[in-house]
Image 1 (cartoon, one colour):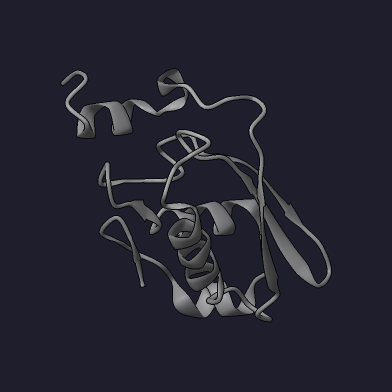
Image 2 (cartoon, helix red, strand yellow):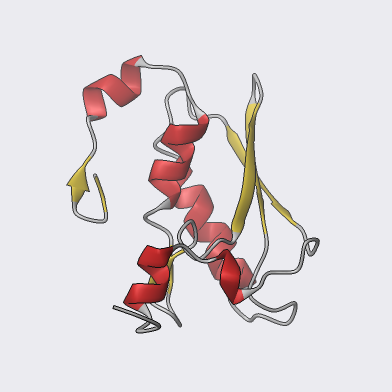
Length: 116
């Protein structure tokens, strides 16, 4: 398992608790196929709620009519299936606040050629 070329410590991950940082690290492998940038750096992930039996990922899409909704939902579930204890994964798709390009990280902006 890797996140953007960084190896994850699988043994530590399996032994440790599920944390926001771990979830976000795994979500870094969910790439928007139209933009070629992960959903975390695009600013599409608004939050993570970790419960006893489920992990809820609150996220949005670049536009309400985005045809990638089902694909991204499947990819979030695929990536988070690696979590210790295999909790249920729920994607809470929200539209407020509306996504804007300013929500992207500098890394995403560089990857898209906005600046160097």
